Length: 112
Image 1: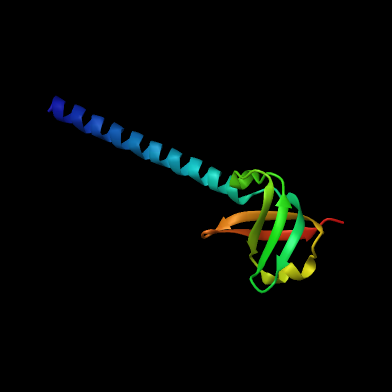
Image 2 (image 1 turned 90 degrees about the vertical axis):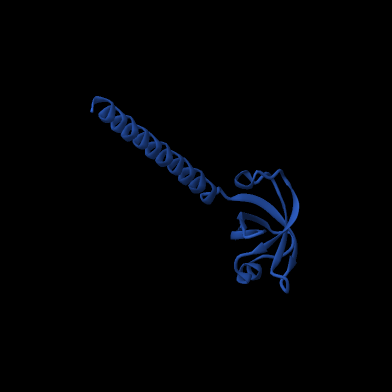
């Protein structure tokens, strides 16, 4: 009987440890996801606007949340109405994220 109770205790402790490890992993994933979602705005310059395609080309510095160095690249916009507020040459502050398979500007404002 003593061996059975030790076995049950060992099994219970093993299960408790596994649950704590899984909860810890989920907690770390949640924070990593929250950090990704709370991207700080970046600054850039509008190089091209393609209203028909719903795209904007931006010369930008590093995009930390995407692990991307500074470059000039084309982004989709989350809302085509964003393109009405900018023109080529504007300095902008924006947030880009990966939405599906496309890099997408999710927030955009002209820097005055």
